[in-house]
Image (cartoon, rainbow, N blue to C red):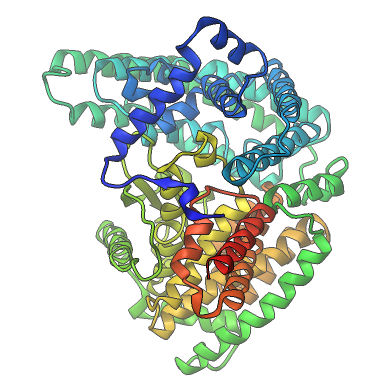
Amino acid sequence: MQKDEVQKQGGRSTSWLWLKRISIVVGVVTTGAVALGLHTWFARPLSVNWFYTRVFVQFALDNPEFLTALRIFEPLGIRGHNAKLADASQAHEDQTFAWLRDTQATLRRYDHSAFTGQDRLSYDIFAYYVDDRVRAERWRHHGWPVNQMVGVHTSLPNLMTQQQQINDATDAEHYIARLNEFPRRFAEVIADLKIRESKGILPPKFAVAKALDQIRDFTAAGASNNLLVSSLRDKLGKMPADRVDATQRAALLARAEAAVAANVVPAYASLAAYFETLRGKPLHNDGAWVLPDGAAYYQYRIESNTTTTMTAQQIHALGLKEVARVGTEMDAILAQAGYAQATRAERIAALAKSPSQRYADSAEGRAQILKDYQAIIDEITAGLDGSFKTKPHARVEVKRMPEFTEAGTPGAYYSSPPMDGSAPGTFYANLRDVAETPRYVMRTLAYHEAVPGHHLQTAIAQELTGLPIFRSLLPFTAYDEGWALYAEHLAWEMGYQKDPLNNLGRLRDEMLRCVRLVVDTGLHSERWTREQAIAYMMRETGMGEAETVTEIERYIVDPGQALAYKVGMLKILELRERARSALGSRFDIREFHDQVLLNGALPLAVLERVVDDYIANRRKAG
């Protein structure tokens, strides 16, 4: 795909760009000739691009939490959505799937046979995503939507404390109104869980126990010291008195505390009470195979997460092959570093315990970890020119993960910046145990979550212009996580892991992704036990037991997601080598990265077509 088909912004602020862009989006739906507007909203729009806009606006208006995270309407003064929570009722879910089927049917009525370039890409990406969502209806009650990893009990506090902004009294009023929505939202989730229970779909034992711990930890401090109150207190405390004076601030905080006491805490208590009833049920710790039609469900999860038609058996075999390859490289570095005896796990454990790799188990030690992560990110951000033509305007910062979620959460995650440019992207580090953060693994984690990984890719996608807005937002796990794992490898190629131990950290994390291919398919297809998977991962990666348990339990509750990293990375590397081989001296890695990044997230087959078109066009250009 020709790079000049997508126009990147230059010199203008991200905030100004998005204000203009969203004004255009809203204008398409709300202004113009009344007849044309009604036709566009209720019938098949004359233009497929108008249809994309309509679908996006309909989806966004139906998902207030999504709007809060994106902040695309706030620059226009539209912010009432910040007072609401999404409808999670079964009736609303029925309506959503009906809407998806109607969207799919309408899309197919457009004659796309003559579409070329970006128009063809947009159609194919949109069709792929909608088809996948329609397929998901068969599995709407499979899986476990409240567990140690995700769920209403953690997602809503994260939304309100990390993403919902408080800039004046109206924002604070919206925040309090949203607190009062908790009982309704929790009741809808519990109703969904009971339907799953009636179908024999019960959460794993560990998920019930750990979710209960999270619920109790969250409510243990009482209303006045609850995170949702203290977060509002902190945000109001930073606000100038001319926006909210001391009297207003005290009144708002009192109302927030009352809302938490009257609505939030009882909502959590109702979820805890339901989970307590599950303790007497025949819970298990098995994979997807134990569910009704478990094999078909897992195959769907594989295809949805990897955007391929690979089977569990193919992925398992690929994982075993990659584990052997990376293990040989790891063993060589360990031997050179003086760790030549014992098992790989024992040698890595010994390295991680050495004083040179440890931070102090204190507030100061944790603060230093965050500072060092930021320094790693700042260093590579300053050195991107040799590998990237296009770089994002949005910054990224490092923060500690909310402590009440740390116990059941992996080592880190990334949160993208709001699209109005009002805040940076955020790399959240899990600091529950400083022993889980030896220095030699930190570079790789920073490259994955921030630059040149998730932040660089996501922020570039958000800043694209000249494309339908969904192209900046749709997620494809194999592309998103495949890029982030590729970014770890790329940083090594760029010379940012010259120290052999830093390279060992890269290989250890790549080994983790190789092992995921084996254990995810092992758990969900080969009927491995939780304990068998834990033992295998510890032996091959050298990770500690607590960290490994967190990983394995993550794979059990989220089948197939962990496969996307390595599958996506291998495809990007394959396409890069295809381009290098075909173009020879004309190959420019910066041009290749533009092809991968300047179209937003893509299914892997579509990404392959983009690169093949680039190769063909580059050859023609001479």
